[in-house]
Image (cartoon, rainbow, N blue to C red; front, side, top):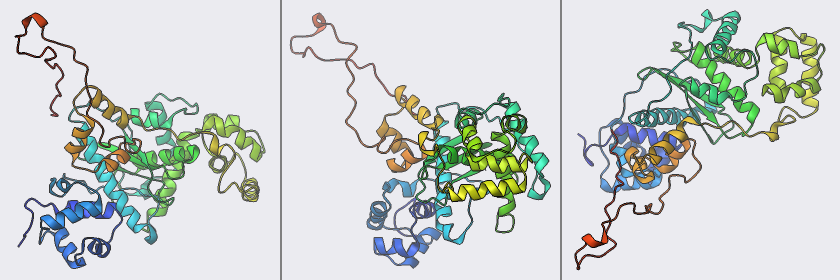
Length: 401
């Protein structure tokens, strides 16, 4: 029998605990409750009382109203991670939650905004073994053709992706293990990508974005992701990223015969891909032999380029635009204030800022905005006991639909 706060949503507690990277044991210690009590709360057998709910709110750094917020329906499509290692289990759980929240916030934004229509080709296969290298090249080419990109290098990959209706977010994940992850939301029929900002590398971030695009194009209907099929599925996404970013017809023409490392570095700025990614692509296209690739790879190691290449520190990673601009539009139109937007989501402002790729504290409490009066009562219409600075405000806020 459930006791405690009425309307408590057990899954909201699980979401927040996993997003904060806490085990039931550690959370229990922090709120001075046993792990079994946490389990009962999360399984819905009991509800925390008001005192316990306040403790959870303080420890997990979220509003108390978060725990009574109804849960939306989520699809069971897999989230494609770059790692399934046991050591990254907690990180994957947290990332899963952030993906759920990103989709929840985006759905909230779409009550007032029309996002770009989804315009992305995808394979209707349910087994990754049905996908071969030729099919990957064809799908990468199809993407470029559909989006009118031709064969030239892409100056801004994230802008291309967002214009195709794919929702992107980029923020620090707290670990260099997690490069990015993606998922199709089948209820909404819209794909999502979250990129890690931890490494802050322009070239690495672009490859990560292209890799996640590969999952969305190739693996929409792949339902099983485990230790058996993980590596070949990841290899396919890698192959797509290279094919999409470095189309054979153009890249092969620009790469000289018997290229040196300096040749790859010279092409790096133009194509926006790392020298090592271009080396792999050149080997796949048989523009260099296996022997040449091994020679170049040894040179990369000898020069210490495995940890960082020339030019890596000269460009900032591409910015996510759609979500920040969406919020700014709602604020500019007076549909929300910063405070009312945060309150409408019942989330901590720092979580919203991360998911919308906003600067830290961009939604923190600020002084109330003071608007200059635009309409005043005529002075000759005022009675003698009426102050002359009375105003009629013509500024109202639209109620969110």
